[in-house]
Amino acid sequence: MILKAENISKRYFRKTGVANNFYAVNPVNLEIKSGEAAVLMGRSGSGKTTLLNMLSGLLSPTEGKVWMDGIDLYSLDDKVLSRLRSEKIGVVPQGRSAIDTLTVPENILLPAGLYGKPLPVEAALQWMERLGILQLGDARPAELSGGELRRMAIARALAQSPDILFADEPTGDLDDENTRLVLSALYAYAHEKEKAVFIVTHENDALQYTDWVYRMDSGNIT
Picture 1 (cartoon, helix red, strand yellow):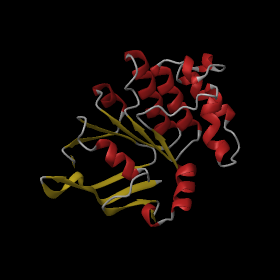
Picture 2 (cartoon, rainbow, N blue to C red):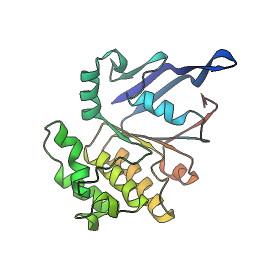
Picture 3 (cartoon, rainbow, N blue to C red):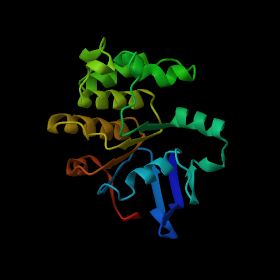
Picture 4 (cartoon, helix red, strand yellow):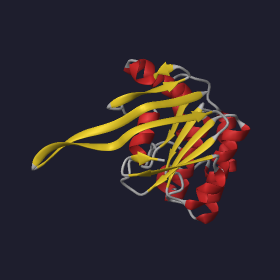
């Protein structure tokens, strides 16, 4: 799997006394391959999440194209793009994404069930164990800490076995021990499963678990 960004940018119109255009992300060229983990670092407000959303098929760029194995993601209609995201792209968002009425395993298995795919029960249990939440099998989101909710969201994305996994600040709610646990699991997913991983973070600990490091400042990437 190769995901390639070709001169993608995101521009917003705003009016601050005088109408003007504001670039959240300036033109970016980027390539992400199977078997590799990449980290994107930068301050809050630098454009990291906007770039992640464009790469993952969630936000159409103002200019440029995003290719996945030769397919122009944003040339697809919404239904086809949604199916492709379900089958090939995993996203761990920053915010809370749990269904309160479901148990932890049910939350993890939900994406597969929505599309009628076989439920990855074994993979779900394996990732729960690897991320230290196996003991929470009967728990519901209201009973979990912020760090446990975060690890549940990561297990949910990993259990679907996406070709590429995007994780937006995946260690934001975690202590040092669980930060290392999560980063190690994401790095292992890339290398053991021959998948691609793209992590947005400001944690320096992530530098130990990556093949490529990108930095973003004011919408510019290096």
